[in-house]
Length: 101
Image (cartoon, rainbow, N blue to C red; front, top):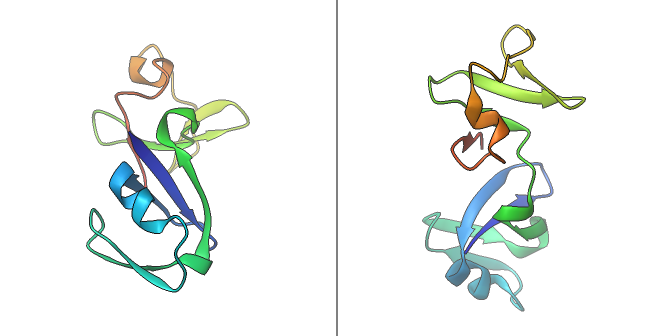
């Protein structure tokens, strides 16, 4: 299972089950193998299963960066509304889109 690790500063990372086990109950700096670096445990805001997180910033299949604002998907660059007829991956519970980190 994948998890979303959210830092106090707002950065988000996808981690594995093994990474989560390495973090739980620890303090100070902890090495996260899938990220290839150290994270200060006191800077973690939350660790939640990836399948329950609603994605609000994504990269679509053609590389367009989209943001969900007030329940509507818009182009991150110009704020234009994105028609989900042209991007069906936005209606599939976000399984086929990539989260912007």
